[in-house]
Length: 82
Image 1 (tube, rainbow, N blue to C red):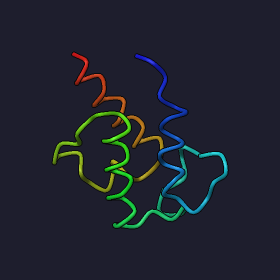
Image 2: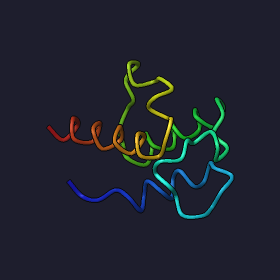
Image 3: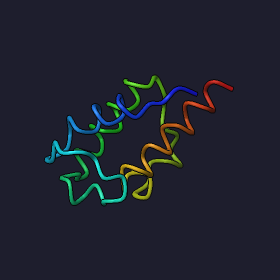
Image 4: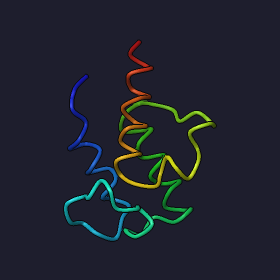
């Protein structure tokens, strides 16, 4: 599977207050993620990576940190490729 880091970070950065390097362990709420922004990030990730988040992944934990969100995106891409 190819590395999605650059595309992921560009897509995420468009919706966060901070444009600095993304710390994958910091909670996204601290970087400006709220419920409306979370929806925008969700749609951006689906469009960028041609994936669909299933209902069971539409939970706070998926969007807690950039690391968790990236793992979710990678998982969905792998499932799609299989």
